[in-house]
Image 1 (cartoon, rainbow, N blue to C red):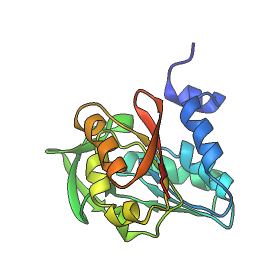
Image 2: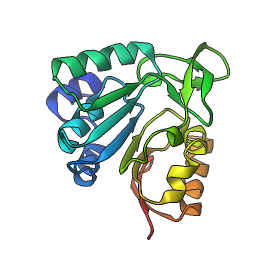
Image 3: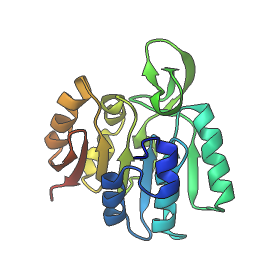
Image 4: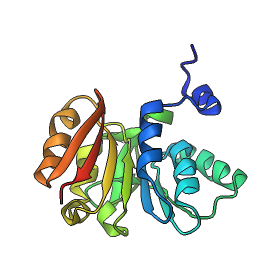
Length: 191
């Protein structure tokens, strides 16, 4: 069994449930957000699906991951991706960030990095979010997007406060939820 994320990406077996749902929800011409883009696995997948008429905004806070993301975009010659080298938060400015790789996250200590609000970007058709427990902070900076009820979402919900509060935040904005597994959900606007 192959367990390392890197090897699973090469073999096309990385996060099969999330991958399946991204492929089913993303369409040509869409504007999509990859919040927590890491090295670009989903960013590149979304880029290919939305095509030249679509746009991908890849949000990544960790500078080391951004360097890999830029390299992968260059190698694959993808021109419809905007990299936002910042944490997604409830405000613009700076936040503290600790850790590296898959485990980097907003924290009370660590290095200072730029922070942005999702509401300052065009309303997306689809958001994929996996940001290691900062989901509550990110959605606090996306109240306009949530209230417009246009955006479908795939969210990895992390242990602790996020797993308790994210479903409530989304359902309070009249999103219908479908759990993919115990920590990943699809949120569809109820119209």
